[in-house]
Amino acid sequence: MATVQIPSKMQFSQRSLRGARRLLGALRLPPSRPRAPRRQQSTLAGQRAGSRSSGSTSADGAASSDIPILELRRFFVMSAVPMVGFGLVDNTVMIQAGNAIDLTLGVTFGLSTLAAAACGQICSDVAGVAGAARFESAFARLGLPRANLTAAQLSCSLVKRVGLAGQLVGVFVGCSLGLVNLLFLDTGRTAEIKAVSRERSAFSIHVSNGERENATAVTVHGPDAPMLVASLTAVLAAQRCDVSGFSGGSDEGREGRVRDVFYVTRGGAPLDEAELEPLAQTVLDACADAGKKQVQKHLYNQNPSFGLSHATASFLT
Image (cartoon, rainbow, N blue to C red; front, side, top):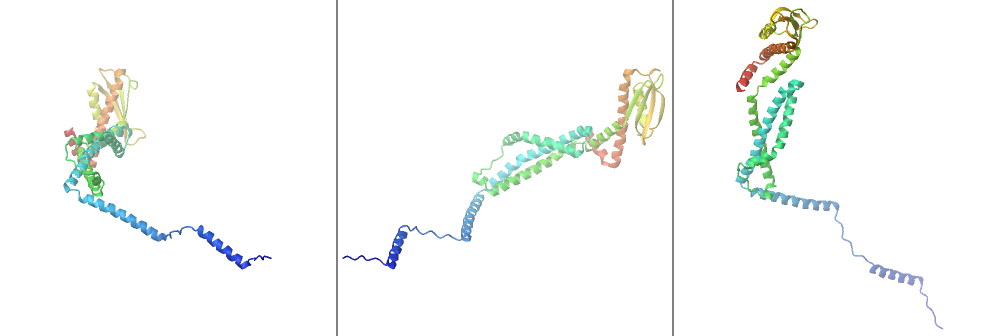
């Protein structure tokens, strides 16, 4: 009779362990590469970046050392000359436009000198942008020697600094030349015109035939100015008017202002109605002239050089 041998529990467990080892050996993955520490990785990255920067620096230095001094001088001149013209035109337009605005809009709307200068700067900037292409073409026709620089040399720091220095020097020289325009401007004229404008608006003239029979009444309200009555009498005489009467005194309730009334005739009769308005305008102009002389005297007392600048500008114009 055959016998069946039953493995013990220990033998069964040993066989199962050997089978599991064979299975794990068949499925074993290749060993992974050990990772470097983070600090070591950052050090390697820094070394690589440093090698790249040192390479670019060495390349830039090599390109700078290969540039002749003559080419740098030519590049400096090429950068400076156009900016001289730009600075000259910019300052000229700003001064001339600012002065014109100050004498017109500044007087009409009471703008300050700085506001007029700001408006002149706007005009100069617009002129510079509009004429940039013409400036470049005009300076290209001058036949200036051009710098023979490669693209790599133009991108190096030395050439960029030379170009910037040329532009700065050119703008400084051009703007300094533009200041010559101030020699041909009457800087005190603006203050005079503004003051005269205020004086002109301070006077009021009223001409009527209804105040007195057989005479025309010319009433003047305004500040008390020296020789005002004499000036108005001379103006009325120039208009072929005979002064038959006069009354003057301070304006009621207004300190420093007067009320002068001239009674005039022409050929022993009052003036025609059509002649009243032109006569009033003529008298107002005479009052403004009297106020102008007073303003000029006041400005001269404040600044004695005003008379010299006024005479120089009158001679030049």
